[in-house]
Length: 202
Image (cartoon, rainbow, N blue to C red; front, side, top):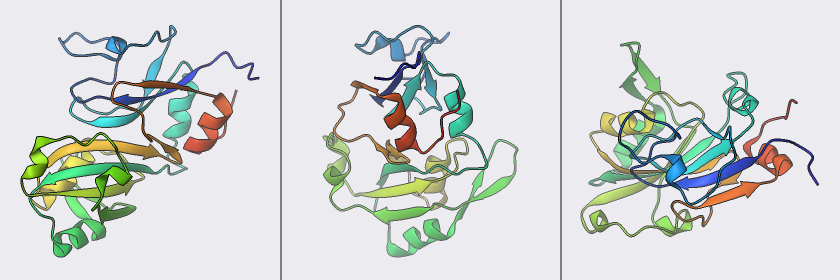
């Protein structure tokens, strides 16, 4: 039995919810989830308001620094629904890297670790009732080891395809699985660290 004073959670962040507990804006917050989080819980990294999927929460302030250590790359995979068809040529553009604007005002060449077209979306995510799927669209699975501001959406726009839905399905070997939108799962410390691929430092 772990004697750690810290606690660790994963959630399936729903659409239209921010990745924080406090905001000066009238938005849905993590505290609106049906779960009694302990004092000091915070999100590790963020998913923007319109993005969904795997979000890590903890009371351990050191985890963010460990997970975002530039010396060690951690893979994050996203299931992406874009408007219209992505041809093999466009997919190859993404695979080789596309130029996107970043906050410094310069262009940045964004190269995914891997990217592929997904035929059977429910192999990766079960909660797929989306009326927009009746119109021409493409689902892709993209893996990155970097996280520039709105990078996935900007990469899609670089090939003239608008991102309609963005779902993070894994961080390292920690997968979202069948967790329903808005659901919370508490994890054992050792398993949490092993799956996301970081070494614990007390």
